Image 1 (spheres, rainbow, N blue to C red):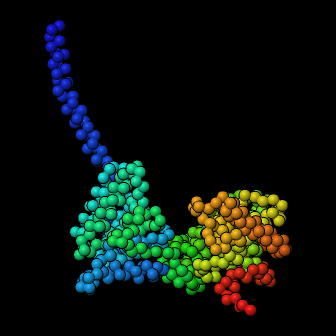
Image 2: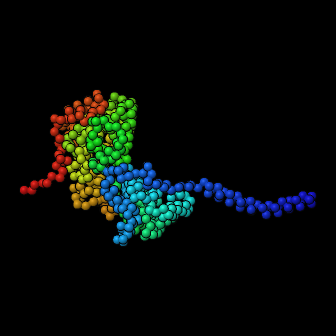
Image 3: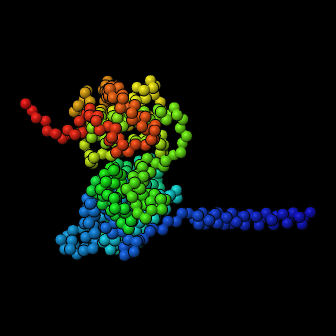
Length: 501
């Protein structure tokens, strides 16, 4: 018994001596394994002289942005020309605009044309759940760029790390990463040939400290291309593609108003795919039209629609077509179909004659009438309405709201805005504002019903043709509607100087 007691005492002594060391070693091992699984993101370095580099010839439709960025190219390529005049290399260039307009493409082209080394990284790679990791990555990125100057650091989706700081303390890692980025932007040597370029779709969300002079003080808007720009983009993306003799890229560009460069590139690729499915040797104009429908409206669906629903769809789309014709040159109809594409059971496709940036009150009211044509046709023909006009009603509500809230196009306030975020408005003014918005939509709907009732015979003819053929193109629609005079000339007379007595 005494031997057993001594043995237990020795085991207890060993346990008290070694267990803390074993426990401490286990903690160190777990921390080491955690570090092994921490995310590692290597900055992408692209050599400017590589065969896959992007040149100015590959960038089209953004001539204003190219002209602004040419200054950076000249600074990096011919630094002595500016240094002897006391000029400094611009530190930060921020490219902002809608997605797909070519911001990343512009940054790559600047790197190639200037001969600088190009470091590309997404801002989301800097922000992690581990404290201090994002700030460390930013320090390493800038250190490497300074060693290999002249260099361009491109941070895509800058709003992921540059969102305005709230000061609540809940996003300490995000704030620490942003602070490190601000420090690095301030710490540039005057002689260092390092330019930071950022891209963002949400300029309004960025921290004001990022946009002050000395940081991202050069802000370049990269907007969707105009008609000439779209034509140049189509030429770039059809380079090397065999086009048929009848393909006119100017016609395709006119049909793609409002689309970005990425969408135009997708259309060119889809057109080539459509031609490949036909086993054709060249790409026809019909392939571009099919690709446009695929990109804009979505994939064609093989939905089984009952005869009752098909009849309602035919009159609904015929109402849109008839109102579009009655509104003159505002929304020229290109094609109408009752074949489902994407989420839509049917759709009418309009092609504007020209790119427009200004709209009059009369034109906006006409756009509302065209959007309400489908709902009004259902009410007129069947005496009841369906849920098929949900997107149309949303569009009409948005237009009426903007007219009253933002544009001052109401009877109650024609020279001031009544924005929703203006909390200084009285309750009476808010009621008047909402009442005016309802008045605009209701009057547009009543006028739409009146026009459809006046031209009921043409509405029936269009609906019967849709039930028979399912799809009508612009040539067939022109034959139906050529004798019908428009009811509105708001678009044609826009910009006409009024003669005073």
